[in-house]
Length: 479
Image 1 (cartoon, rainbow, N blue to C red):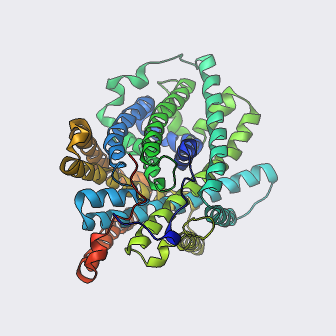
Image 2: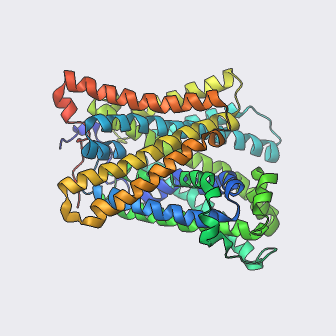
Image 3: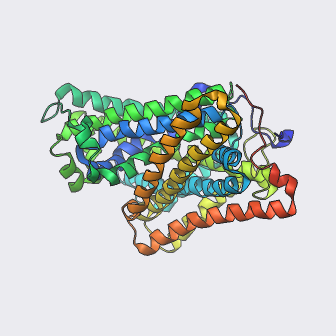
């Protein structure tokens, strides 16, 4: 294990447990997911969605068993990269690293599409201002770059404030629905196995697992949290539990608001307004206005959280030579990734410029295409991380027990491999694009994998010491 030089280290003890949990949950953008993405879940799964969240949470809890056990042996901001390197070797680790960089950047850049779309809508409604979407996206890019430069502590405070407001709005909506019972009363159908596990729900599950993207970011901040591995483990389990239970409750409220027999038809008729109509019908116009404003802030919070995750991956790879060494530098005062952060913002600016030049849609293009590429990359990384955990723990930590070293990782790998297949099978639905778009996105993920493996192979031939050090730069290991 090697230590990074002092001027290339992230801020130590910058985050406590609540900071880490808020930062990770903000990545998931709860309000944006419920208002903008959950209607697609209902479109494909109808009343099965609440139960689907509980099933997905159970799978991700299995994944978390091995993932959290590995945090005892890995404390590296390039989380997937370091874990897969330890389990499957530097070639596989470097391939995973490049895929992670592409996936997180795709997710981050795609969120600018949501910002532009929702900000334009809110400005027109509340201020009577009509501006191109890219004006708002550009303003968000500058704000995110600045907050990322200020360091993770400042970002955590912003993310916590927005997240608390998001959760409060959704809880108020759910309580209002449950107080009336909806048109059909309370139904057990959303949790019945025959409903949830129907073979017709494959597309629903492909989408629902996407709601968990980002919970693994707990390990990305392993070098910056107080308490090290123990804090990462607690935050991971809290995040998985919260996502599964909270989304199950909120989506059950939406099912109750429309009725189990009518939710699928309602989603098909008006997916964009499905959840917003529940706020309007069961609460008040004031809360509806607040919700629409918070929807914009929710997307911004996710944007900031994903920016921090993306530049930390690039920082980790620059520190070890998979990307140019300059990417491994940090600001002398805030200890935030410096060149990696600037490069991430520059990449986002280039992508936004291309979408403007070619007149592409911010929602149907930037948001859907980028999020589909990101989800594909993350779900593949989840699967291979489970495999790497099993290989490493069985070889080097058998004392961790059969459940942690074998049973949980094998089960999670098996289920996540199926989810990867489901994502490929439903990729056209995820992108809402044609064969050309789908092919380009899948090829981009493949090129990232090949490029990472090739870079590691080059290091093995030209710099064996650097090759052997891949994935091993760590900030100490806390039990």
